[in-house]
Image (cartoon, rainbow, N blue to C red):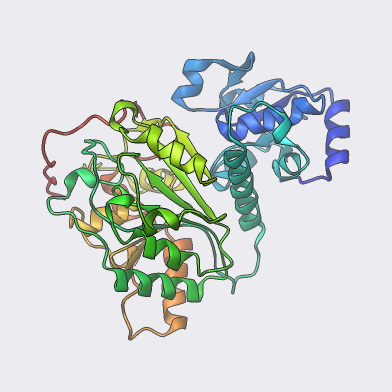
Length: 406
């Protein structure tokens, strides 16, 4: 990708007669659009292959085209990747032999979004810009001895206060959910951090993480890692944390992400008022769900499984659950539920005291970098921008039965 200095970049864009395209119509794309128009650069097209894009057809009165339509443009067109999984999109564009591919790092860095109505809070903008920078930095890392992660999901409970029948983390299949053992969780995090050179973000998940009454201790433990940029807590706003579980949120590294399920998020307004009153960073998001939360054997070919894995929006995530490390929350919970065949190469046991640090690092590196696909991919409908969208948070009447795997 090209990463020109800001003045050089803008000068080139203003003098170019070829079209300018932003790849991505969601929040990163919105930020790129405002950054470019703020300096007088015209955006000609957005590009996106999602169902959402096909239904919208335009954004900011600018037409949305598919990636297949890019090849109809002037070959000198400029395209900015403004989407979540750059590592997936970049090779796609390179295979199309597109010449002028840009990241948005300098574009975001040189834009004062505080003076622009982006429709996002300043906290949300800052976090997304930081995540984007971290992803671009990870793509440029060439030191093979260095092990770097962007996100680690810390699953602190199998329990949830809702019963969503299509939860992509498979909470709907747990008959007797339990909280994570504190000592095992801390040991697992310590082991992973001992072999990790850099990590951008801890993501504290459930189920509903505020169900676990020890969440304050867990957050305070995560805060001891000084090199971590962000600790994000994902909540459905059904529980108001109290005491230490609320006080731990009053730290500049904490970010609370509320998934707004409308009337199901019954404590949303109360929680937001508390967060505001205590100057705790947060955002509230109305989610879009894909059909990614059903256990079903897919009978896919090797090529289809590899494509599914490569295109998955969770490909850059890592999950800790009950002393083990997995590549994604679907794999973690599917293994934890014994809902899929156990694949030893898809799991790293962080509780094994017989492994040396070097052996552990080798296992984690292989898990994170050398997989064509996971066993879980055979039982997952996929989780990319082409996966069909479904109605959000339909409540199941009972615990769902785990299908027998093949």
